[in-house]
Structures are given as structure tokens and as C-alpha cells.
Image (cartoon, rainbow over all chains, first blue to last red):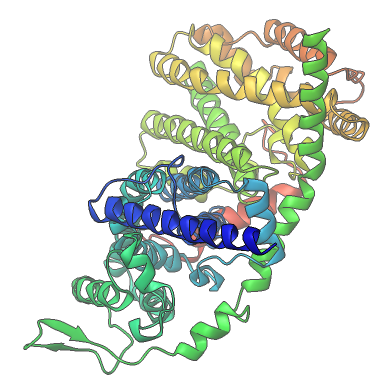
Length: 328
Length: 252
């Protein structure tokens, strides 16, 4: 026993040293900007972080179809209807290849969908706000997709290859989405007083939730430091939020809209806008499930999943029959 | 009505079919049974909106009174729409919506094929472009008919009931009224009797492979082409037209 014990301790030590070597080799590859691929060794925590982030991103795309889909049947012109539909279709496509990117990390789409439906997995809180007017479709494109792009462009250089490559395509389409949103706002702001009021009302409701999309302040962000070291994340939440505010305030000026923040002002010394305090309690409430549409969004997704069960079962049964016929 | 006026009416009917079907499909967004089907539904609806826009734009040009595609889509009343009754029916479940797509698309594919041979150049061009899209739609809806029909006992019974229920709306496709006749005589337009035979052949083949039964041709509903719609249609238009009606003359 005693001898065996000694052997085990030596083995443990050796294993620990090997693990440390692998870990530092992994970090060296990341530091050298090499892409990590699906079959490469990676720390378990790196894999888990990516699965969480990529699946959350995929879920956000899928749930995000709902607030915009809400205006498909009521879009005010055939051209707007076609553009909005193309955008919603892109989102389904983004969901599909993000799920595929996550699957390369050894988790199945069925499992990810089950986690979404059970409430275990999260999606972007912004989609728990309602689209109450046509201008909200403009505001989502302009602000929400604008904020998403700020977050996502750096992800094209993410250390994990399949995710980085998926993001290249996602970002190309997102920048089209952002432009179409701005174009809707521009048309409204060039229109009648009622249309301008509709645009201002949408900005008033979407501004603060859009700023929350960048996540907690850096001092409160629990995943940030490790994700930065792994080059999953390249800029901090506050850096990206500041960049978004600087760009967007000028666009609002151009549209003739007012940002709903009395504390907003340009700081000559830093060259940036300073802005008021975000209502973090609201942010936490919405994440905890208490936003205006949390229940509605998840219920609709569950309903679609349940209603489709007989269709999926039939397709599977047919595939089995076909396989048996081919084999016979 | 002369044949030129008939061509205008005919073009609007084609546009209305595409738009009203697309509008119903839009109600299905984010409610599909699989993510892949979400993409297919959105993609096909986008094809139909594109076709509607081409037909409406052509109708507007022919009319020459300054109306636009949006005036046709958003500022006409129920009785001015000439789409088939089948296309305005509520979606129901996946099987109901599928049967509607399937029965219409097989018909529409043959109609477009005939239009690629008609005497009007613009309709020929639009049809030549649209048929490539509808070819693919037909493959998709036919495959799903077979999967559901030859799937589980439950799916078989369910899609058979959908087929039986939708059948009464198929007669209207093949009843030629004055517009159809003037289109056929004046512009070498589609021969609906010939298309009926092709449609029965193609539908019959898929239905047989799906192990389903073709319903009997009993009483058939009609009136959609002439602007006499079902009760559902007013609600569809009210929803679709609401912004244009609430803000007359606004630009979006």
C-alpha cells in the first residue's frame, strides 16, 4: 500500500506537470494569435466559456426573430416588408451557424435548445423589450444591431477558429441590418410630425436597454479577465459602450433626435461623451426574468417547439422507413 | 372588358396571389418546427413578395395613372383583390399550411410555365424568373407531403385531414372566367383545362407516394378571383394595411 501510494503521488505530480505544460503551450498559441480548432486540445474552462457564449449568441438570434417578426405582417411598404423579412431570415441563419460552431465543441443542438426552453440558458436581455411601433424596427436595427456590431467585430478575431469564421459572415450581415435600421429612422425623421414623434419615442425606450447590452461595468464583470487572456474578448464592456455612445450620439444629432439622458455631454479633454448612470437594477431584473416580454418570448418558443414535435417525429419515422427500404 | 383590360386584371391577380400567400407565411415566422424550416419559410415568402412587387409594378405601369406597388397592396379594399380563396385561409397547423402551399405551388408552377410562352413580353420575363423559385418550392412542399403522409400514423391522419379540408378551394384555380379567357385568346395565355390535367397528374403522384388518398371532387368554393372573399380576408388586410391607412400619404 505504502509503495503504491508513493507511486501514485509521483504519477500525480507528473500528470500535473504535463497539464501545466499543455496549458502554457495552449496559452502560447493564443498569445501568438494562432487559431484554436475543434480537434485541438483546450482547457475545459475555455471550452465551457465558448459553449456558454456561442450558444447564448445563437439563442439571442433565434429569440430576436420575435420582436422584429412582430412587424412583418404590418410593415408599411412592400420594400420594407421584404427588407425586414430578409433580416429576420438572416437571424435564423445566424442562429443555425452559431449552433453549428458550438457543436464543434461537443455539445448538441438539441441539448442547447433544451437548455434555452428550460430557462437554464440565457439570451440577450434586449429582446425582452416589446416592439410597440414601426419605429421600434428602426431603433432595433440602428441601436441594437449597432451595439451588437461593436461587440461582434472583435469576435471575428476570436481565438477559437470556428466561432471567428462564423462571426465574419454574421458581422457582414449585421452591418447591413444596422444600415437598414438607420434608414428607417431617417425616413421617419424626414417625414411628418407624427412620424418624427414615433422615432423619438422609440429612441427614448431603446436607448438605455441598448447601453445595457454591453454588460456590467468592468469592475463588476466576472468573466472578463479570463476571456481577455484567452482572446475570446478583445475590449472591455466599458470601452465598447463608450465607443457606441460616441458614434451614436452624432447619428442622433444628424437625425434631429434627442438622446434621453440629461447628463450626456461632450468632454473636450477626453474627446468622448460622458453619460448618465445606467439603471443596473432594471438590467438585473430583466436578466432575472422580469422584463416586459421574458415570459412571452420563451412561451412562444416553447409553443413552436411543442407544436412542431409531431412534424419532427414524422420526418424521423419517414427517414427510418426510407433507410429500411434502401437496406432491403 | 377588352383583352388589354383583361391583361391588367390578370397581372393584378398574379400579384395578389403572391402577396396574400406571403402574408400568411409571414404569420408563421418564429413558429416553425425546426430552424431549417424557419429559413425555408422566410426564404420562400421573400420570393413571393419579390414576385408580387414585379407583378404590381407592371400593373402600375400598364395602368399609367401614377399608382405604385404600395397603392395596390395597401390602399385597395377586399373586393378589389383577386387572389385565390385557398391562399387567404388561416394557417392552421404545419400540415394545413403545407397542404395549402403544395396544392397552390404545383398549380402555380404550371401556370408560370404557360406564361413563359404567352404573347406579353413582361409577363414572360417575370414568369421565367419566378418559375426557378417555384420549382424549388414545389420540391420542398412535395417532400414534406411525403414525409408527413408516410411518417407516423398520427402525421398521416393529420395531413390527410388537411388535404380533405383544403380540397374544396382547388376548383377555383381551374374555372376560367372572362379574364382568363381573354388572356388565353388575346395573349396566348394559360389553358386552365390543360393545366388542370397536369396538376392532377403531379398532385396524384405525390399523394400516392405519401400513401394518402386524393379527395373526391365534390362541391368547390369560388369567388376569390372575382373579389368575393372569405371572412378571414378582411382581418388579413386590416393588419397588413394598417400603417398606410393610419398615415395617408406618408413616406416610409
